[in-house]
Length: 91
Image 1 (cartoon, rainbow, N blue to C red):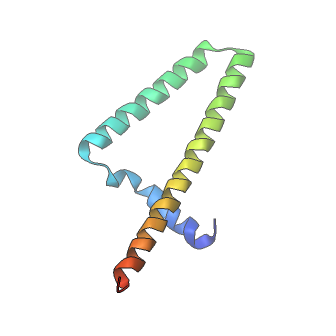
Image 2 (cartoon, rainbow, N blue to C red):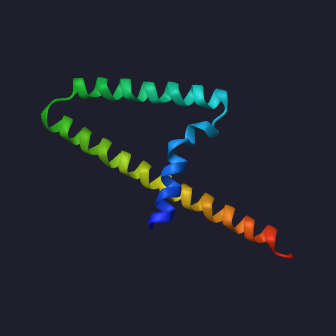
């Protein structure tokens, strides 16, 4: 990602929760808390090779979610730019 897009992306990621409604934010926090609790519980139950495999799964899952976030940002930015250009044209 070039520097301009990276700056926009970092700005949008810092305040992304501010776009959620009260109920959505509550649900998000509950789900995130439960996710961490269950992840910790699984890590305590697993040993050796299974624990390594689980941690590898978590790392890959987080990477995939990060790439999904970047993709969603780019799509949203592209739509916004297209709408801006359309509104300035004489359609």
